[in-house]
Image 1 (spheres, rainbow, N blue to C red):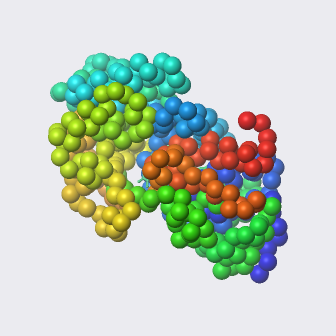
Image 2: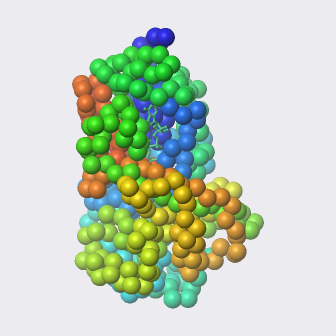
Image 3: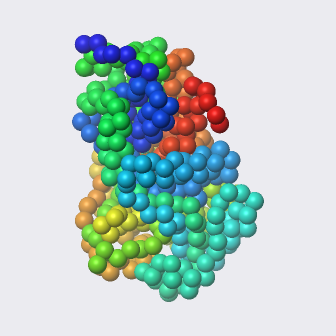
Length: 380
Ligand SMILES: Cc1cc2nc3c(=O)[nH]c(=O)nc-3n(C[C@H](O)[C@H](O)[C@H](O)COP(=O)(O)OP(=O)(O)OC[C@H]3O[C@@H](n4cnc5c(N)ncnc54)[C@H](O)[C@@H]3O)c2cc1C
């Protein structure tokens, strides 16, 4: 079967595909989205829902993350989604953690971060459930926004569909060439094709993507029941281990010493790639994670040991009032070892946007805007 031609075809209904469709639709173009699964199931609904500019390094990644944040807020208002813009707090317990955070705050003055050091008392005022014992202080950042990824993706998809963007489910792209996409449900034609297929390295551009250096990464996640009385936590949370995770902290001189100390104080955590973060849903449940297993270390099995390590670390700094774990899952994303994203143009009308690793929610709207403008022109 042959379908009517549109201006654009977007392959993949994750956050990169939907944010690309959002920008294209707003330019008045006709858009079709092809998704291989029956509904949205990929990394974009398995994450914390953290729009997290503080994790992005100075330069294009931070600029794009902040631009993306603006688009998220516009979209949230337009679509009518729940969100919380309370920022984030890194809770710190060791002198080297404090040193790295203070170096970050000092350096941040010259850049677009919006951070401040909090004393233990100030930190506990912002997040009353923090444990005071051993707390040296906290790094507060104002820019982080929390969404519920399951609701956000479903809401955005339904809104786009209501605006006339056509969605084709169970329609895997098998072959893409010069504006023509072949699926098991027929062929589709468009002026431009945007390939946002996430961590899948075996699809139409398998050779190109495998040569790009992208490595898949598996993460374990948990969600608790709602806190008693649906109490709000306040800002989203991270702690000392997270300072060793995001590239934004790489320029802090004390980071290498901190890494050594974290390995010594928290044996096994670096081996499993565990750092602990917390977001909260509208209903009051805590979304917790995560761990990182790369490439050949990926298997389909969840490790109870890893989950217990995540919970043990959390329970040292946060009192979750014995709220039990209600669900567990894993997610996979594709990450480039050096680059914050991967954009490829296999032919003049095909544009691949992927490799955003653990920052796809954060970068999505900003990155897709940049790529769409580079291809189609328009104000920067
Ligand atoms: C556990 C976890 C926690 C995370 N936490 C955060 C966070 O809090 N903040 C943040 O910024 N980022 C976070 N990330 C990263 C973020 O979720 C990802 O970077 C982002 O979701 C990637 O979006 P995507 O659209 O590229 O991929 P996906 O969401 O995986 O979407 C790709 C889609 O393409 C479809 N597809 C693949 N091949 C084909 C084909 N041939 N034809 C048609 N369709 C196809 C797939 O079925 C899928 O629906 C997290 C990731 C994980 C796994």
